[in-house]
Amino acid sequence: MVDVKQPLQIGNLTLRSRVFQSPLSGVTDMVFRRFVRRFAPRSLMYTEMVNATGLHYVKQLPKIMEVDREVETPIAIQLFDCRPHFLAEAAVKAVAEGADLVDINMGCPVNKITRNGGGSSLLRQPELAQEIVRQVVAAVPVPVTVKTRLGWSDQEINILDFAKRMEDAGAKLITIHARTRAQGYNGSARWEWIRRVKEVVKIPVIANGDIFSVEAAIACLEQTGADGVMCSRGTMGYPYLVGEIDHFFQTGQRRTPPTTQAKLLLAREHLQALYDYKGISGLRQARKHMTWYAKGFPGASTLRDQLCRLETLQEGLDLLDRAIESLPPEERN
Image 1 (cartoon, one colour):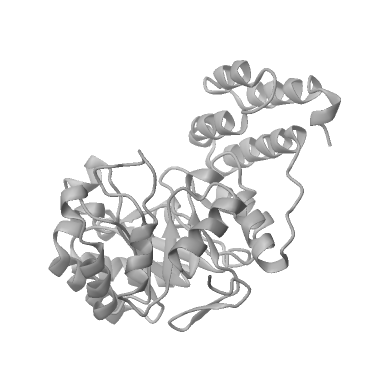
Image 2 (cartoon, helix red, strand yellow):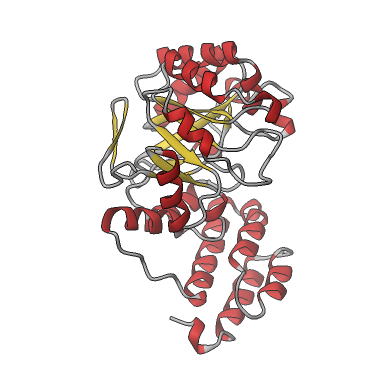
């Protein structure tokens, strides 16, 4: 297993943590990243993925591309598209916005992305994927990385050749979600493929898929020999996870898990922050976040049902306050 206490070098960028927060569409906005960073101050965070073509036609950068260099470092901006020149242009804007690293999404399985040639559809066009990386690398002074999957389907697993192509084109790191596009998020991540990738490339390899706990992160690194792990769905409603894993890697000690009261207080803070940042659209976005927080305690299902239909900020704050007040003593701080 890699020495998880050691810094990770990605091109000219040195990272002091080998635990990353995955880019998640509709989730990893600046508000969410700040909560994750509260518990994992050294970890690399990613923006939501940004459409390079859309960026070409707008004068003002979209809110999902916004970063705060005062507190957000290290930070990566993730781009997606299938047009090399648009991606190179977008990468320049990303660096100007403050990105320490530019990541290219070649793994998103969603139809609206793949049918336009982006995301995991690039696994079927390795020459185009290479050209994308070449042009983006030539355009920016920061490291360029790739996030991808094992292949399009079980019949088209081509990650070994694909990863080598990305390295040859100039990518400084590759993150592998150990599922195929056809799997989506179903079934188990097949970590054994990540070990095989480690055997064919020299650049760092980050393991992604089914990292829901400290134990899973340890098992993944032991099985794969990967250089680090990336947390995705495990942080939805639980922004403590990246920090818990990193803390264990650095100290060998486990953090005390948060109580239900602590999690609901964090949910309350998250709700308020989303509203302050985005107004009514933030309130709508908060509904899903609130339902993710409301799990694992008496009355959680009823609370989830109420939170997913929030109409006003005060309604949400009141619901959470009442839920906190009704918790049994063992669930409080």
